[in-house]
Image (tube, rainbow, N blue to C red; front, side, top):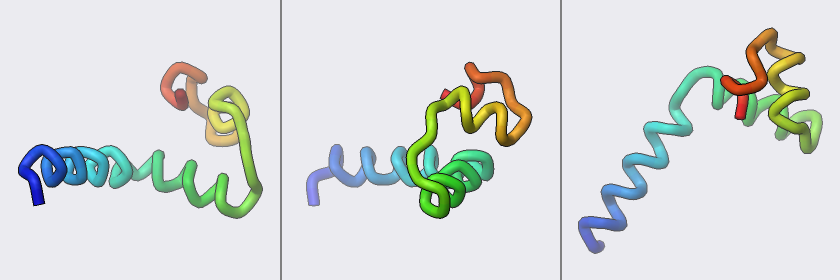
Length: 51
């Protein structure tokens, strides 16, 4: 496997491992598509933090 591919995968996993992103993913899986603003409202965040 190319080093750049492995590095990209590790970076992607770090991003997805953030607790709020996991919460968003779970919500989206269960309830379907939502905008960043909708997610922010649902979880009490600033819309910029959710995007």
